[in-house]
Image 1 (cartoon, rainbow, N blue to C red):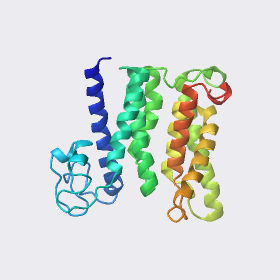
Image 2 (tube, rainbow, N blue to C red):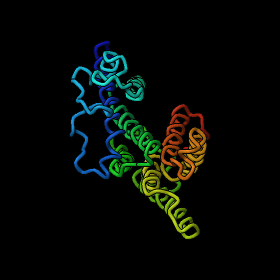
Image 3 (cartoon, rainbow, N blue to C red):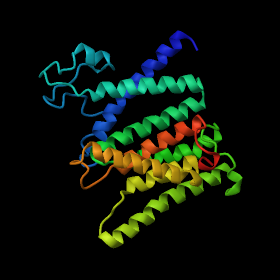
Image 4 (cartoon, rainbow, N blue to C red):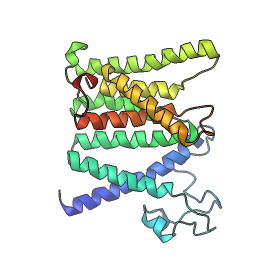
Length: 267
């Protein structure tokens, strides 16, 4: 791949990284405010409400031109905007290096994009967008027709096809957490696991199949406990299980890609 193609893809990933900031901030707000959507009102300073000029909306460059402060009120701009953009260009270029221009690049980056937004909204607002959960499940069912990126070896032991294995993975992942929540509700008289978390694990099951779910649940639980220690006051009453599961899924996929797990853990 040539230099200009890499620059072009870098700009694309930067733009998508910038868009994640919009999604992370606005998606939780749109739940209770129908007048707000992803494109209206136009991007503005959260503090003074002044609209941000086009040049200052450019990824990284806008932050540098403003020297990290609002051009109108002087309020410090949250560094997370810059971090999101950098994270996406790094991840995107890694996927580009691993898969070149292919369906593997499309599905791997799209999955990363969706999960990146979800991990942030869950961590900040305990919110996992339903539409994004559906996207994860759709990736599990659709990707098998275009790529073997998430191909599950030796699926014949429990299913007649890759598609059936995705179905089994979804339903087992979904109903496992659903059943646990029912038991918790019978004892505590309240929900212990959010619907978004339940659907999320179902989506992961559609991608990795049912036999790999215990590994993701174990890794995800450990990550959730670790996250809870980062801010004990914030997570005193509620834990961001979705964020933990996503981190567990990422780690599982890394181990699987580099063949660092025993075969029986990844079928």
